[in-house]
Length: 447
Ligand code: PHE
Image (tube, rainbow, N blue to C red):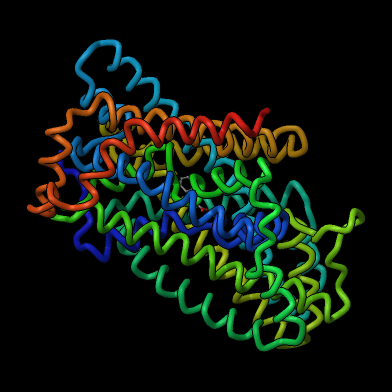
């Protein structure tokens, strides 16, 4: 069977950054920064992104391209002993499961983004009742919009790597950059914006040693680069053989952290612009309102306060969120789909629709038991599974994957790689430091 492949370097970079740039950047990052000391969080996040997340990303890309297969087959095939093969199978299945469950909760939030995007439209046409329904929490709305969002995701993935993932990333990512830039310029020109910028960019170093801040920043970095669950591994398996992996990996990491940084320049100033318009931005305990209330209450109140311009700005903001969400969700769905297609021989279209349906059932169960399940699924997948699977991937890359195979894999894209800095540092780094640092960072969150 013919495997898909990205047709160009730009195509891969846009697809992989599309996976990386998502709600995690535009919602998660600014919210976390607002909650955890602004610039202190930003700094810790950037350090961890390059120190831990980039090497782990490289592990996935190299394993993926070398094996040209889904996570389970990939990890099994680089292992030689039968014990390592079993570990590979379990890690691979764990990753596929985690990607699928991330999609379950992600589609619920992404559905809200679509609903909030349509609200200004309803308002514009005088349909107030519809507008209210769109922004009020209800089971019907949640189910309807997560189904809509999942259908979009399924449509893109069923079209395959080049015609689906690559084509849509190439259309959507440039629009995302333009929208983000335009919104930042607009918000920074409003009264109050500078105060927000100060909160974001002037660090309070005393907060940097806060264990919660470090664990959050690590989780944020792993989630944001889509690590641990086989997404980058499967995208790596579709890269052309002559591509220089350390360079494209670095470009993806830079784009991802760059967009998170820019999203902070949008959301934090916006909070203080809202305050200028009379919106309450501090909660009862004196800290900034963060979490879902920030995106779904503070910002909409800001757009309301801006009158007619606010309709356009609000619409643009939620279009931005929706685009970011789709280019990420397609990469999540690709993980179980590629596995099913490659191991069970199911056709792509059939596999995509069936798995999409399964994810919808799962997200419906979560929606119906929202208070009990939503936070639980988020914590289990992003705070536990992602870093721990990340450790396993580093162990596979550092201890199990044959060093010469890694080298010849890298040489295809850069004949002089052996003399470069990457090859001097990365193999040792991924073998010892990465697993250790991830485990330590992870562990200190509990003690
Ligand atoms: N990186 C995406 C975001 O920031 C989320 C994601 C996680 C995508 C895991 C794929 C796999 O929103």
